[in-house]
Image 1 (cartoon, one colour):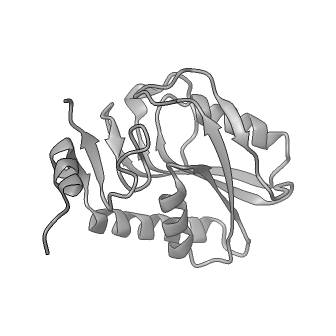
Image 2 (cartoon, one colour):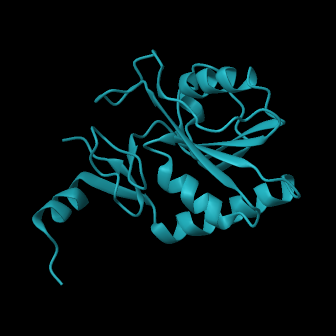
Image 3 (tube, helix red, strand yellow):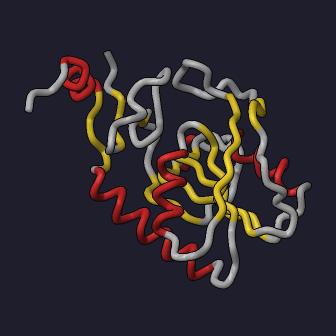
Length: 183
């Protein structure tokens, strides 16, 4: 099977950081941690679109509980590689999270600005609990201290793509997480 020219170009643009197999194993472990912590409940897994959708779905499948999925969309990056500092809600949740255990799923926690915005917004809705699960935790990039309850890996300030995360809408469909190489 030959690769398409666009896939060959993608492989030159991106250096693999975590393989699909490593991601699957770590997400499985995280799902079991969440099930242990929230045993007996029906949590709502909230995905921040679009970057966390693959992580959220895989995490839900790896969590042996009855879970509900919901989605929201915010904007803070635009087409750049760094947060603008302004977070805007584009699409809100459909479910009422009052009295529910909520697991906020993020692909990557970076500056903390988006997460802080969302946590403040959710707290006024009175969830029973609010936890954060992220595949990648970029601790060195924090501008605001935010809690991360479940983290796949802690990484530096690399610009990561793949497994739902993008650079100007490219690379989301990569099955692995990679570092975007400078042109």
